[in-house]
Image 1 (cartoon, rainbow, N blue to C red):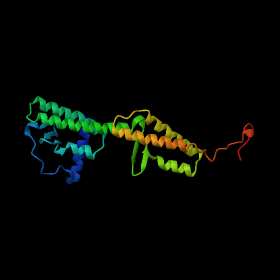
Image 2: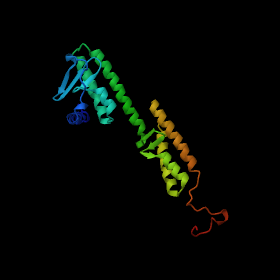
Image 3: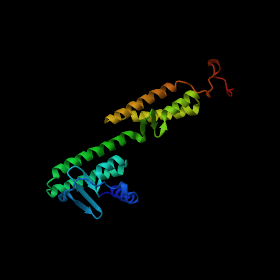
Image 4: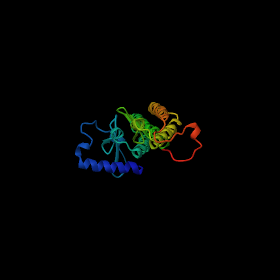
Length: 218
């Protein structure tokens, strides 16, 4: 097993010891003893015909509760190893186990694709409750500030946000989530372009006949 998954298991064990309610609840179906896999000390994979458990914790719950890329990558490899082990032992439920492994791997890959699309080009775009965050910056709030006081400094900041949004738009989406992120990025890009049509209030604009003059702006 790769280190990120083992590190997570240790942190989960400590958390369970501190908070016993975090342990796997009782009442689950009995596990199949022929599908019990112990590749290393302190690591036990089991299967009850519907769910895969690692040290008595339902692996599918981990994917819902924890958002760690290292954990997801470790699970993909570890689940494949577990499936191959069951095949090599001709476990009676190996077909059902392989189906559950496939489902978990698809869920994990979906999580990874979502993270990838949210951070294309080093950019992270998230939305909710009427807000849109680009690298944790509230773009709508910045636009409102520029409309209220369009300074040169605020303009440069918006130009930087526009460039970051352009990087996101350069990569075509590969999932419905990515398509939604592209839609949000394009709307923000257009709004920023429209806002930048307003010149900053602290920029001197000389009349055409005075542009050759030198001197300071009053």
